[in-house]
Amino acid sequence: METGSTSGATGAESIVVENLHKRYGDFEALGGISFSINPGEIVGFLGPNGAGKTTTMKILTCFMSASGGSASVAGFDVHNDATEVRRRVGYLPENVPLYDEMIVFDYLRFVAELRGVAKGRREERIRAVAELTGLEQVMGRTISELSKGYRQRVGLAQAIIHEPDVIVLDEPTTGLDPNQIIEIRDVIKTIGKEKTIIFSTHILQEVTAVCDRIIIINRGEIVADGSLHELEARVARAEPGLVVSYEGEATDALYAWLSGLGGVEGVSEVGGRPGSCTYRLKTLDKATTRRALLAGEPGVARELLELREAEPTLEAIFRLYTGGETEEGASLVSVPASAATASEEGDEVVAQRGEAPVEASVKNLNASDAEVSESMAEDAATMDETSEPEEVSRG
Amino acid sequence: MDKIWMVTRRELGTYFNSVVAYIVVILFLVITGALFWLNFFQEISVVSLRGFFSQAPLFLAFFAPAITMGLLASEKRSGTLELLMTMPVSDLQIVVGKFLAAVGLLAVVFLMTLVYPLTLSMLGDLDWGAVAAGYIGLMLLGGSYAAIGLMASSFTRDQVVAILVAFSICFFLYLIDQLVGQASGVAARSAEYLSTSYHFENIARGVVDARDVFYYLSLMAVSLGVATLSVGARRW
Image (cartoon, one colour):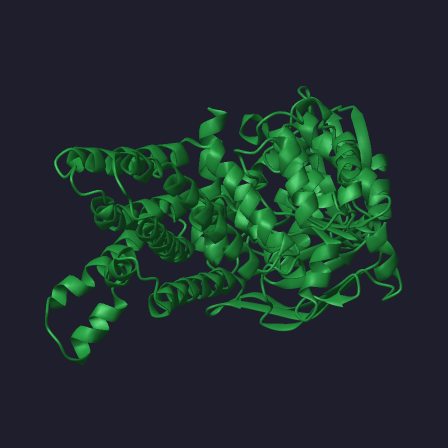
């Protein structure tokens, strides 16, 4: 707690970013972003790969200098008071770089020393973070022998061992299986009760599970900033609609009838359960459409199974704010198939994604990552290379 | 200073937990040992370590880079350097810490070669002063090569590139005075001054001259300085 007391007096906000710019050669990774985060907030940093999430985090953790603008963490400027900032920040980079040849306990002790944990408290802190992250079982094992889930926990443990005020996590759940993701989320939530956490992800469900607040970043600009409910409300206004299900197979007649209803501007078929068909109706005047639907009868006798409002999904939020782009720049040519169709088909895709099982859309996002990731100048190169040994060890 | 020692201790731990360090140490001892013992009985009338001290610098030009090649390159590749650089430790502390670890490993290797002078001293009257000077020279030379190796390691994320670059520089500096032979003149003098072997021979003769020591220390300082800048360049 010795770090907490000093910074508490210096300012109300734990992270303040003002007009931050970063250029790699002639590529502008950050085009002047500004935001501020209050102590105790868990903020999800969302955006396509290459949007500038990692760059922002590297600047906040003093790994990189900004080309322009200012950023301060825990009341200290990242440029002028880098040492002070580093004392107060815990950082887990993407891909969890750890010293593979070290034993977990030795590694944590090394980090505790380097991060400036007082000598008498090191053992105690190591025990505390091991308990919090569930590492007790593996303290004596070499890091290279650990599963990906345990590696991630070691990464988290080293980020919090010095009780930092601010914790920066870059894609902490990438590459984990669903159980591990839930475990890591729980750890993040536990830590987040006391600390400010900023973490990036492109798995949308993550933010619902963990975050108080979402910042969506695209092409180096902040395109949305607010709580999940605020963003959902905005999407609901932007893409209103109803979802209706009927018994039996989809037919052209039914489609034509639905299209003709009052207020309906567009109809798209959404994959439903076997033996039923589901449509998404795009409408601005939901009341009129609903009445028309209930009053009228579709040509053939069909039983109405379901009628509800189309809920704004995270995918819709993401797509609305990022415009379906997956890569910086306008080079849609190189964008992988899934993303390209998404931007061509427009609204229909949103509706379909809204109904599709969660895993499928997550998979889509992940699939496009692999191909897109090369773009991010030098940093991406680092990550590509680091990912190779992991592949090997897994096999 | 504390931070430097933390980095050094971790690196030393890594050295002695990895096969690479043992291979390098054993190889160095086998080669120098073989050459030493081969001549041992032929020149048994001369109780001196001159043979060892004339060959060791050449092998060091290869072994020092082999020790240092991974110090920064592998950390860059795995990304651990990024994490290290976001901890409250300066670039210089990281570089110096790693450098001291390499020097520490070299010191252990040299310690093991003390068997040679000890054996010789049993046969006759060994000039321990000259031996001490020779070892001081070896440490200075080894340190310089380690600094160069660390610098090369900071340029790349590929260990093979690091060792080749470092070996080229070390070998070049070792041989440069032989290019000029007995010639005189400014160019020849400066080539001689730049040469690591020229200064080493001075010291190995038993004369620890401040000028020679200064040469090695400045070589280390420049190499470590460049390495620090090169590590820091990633921030921009």
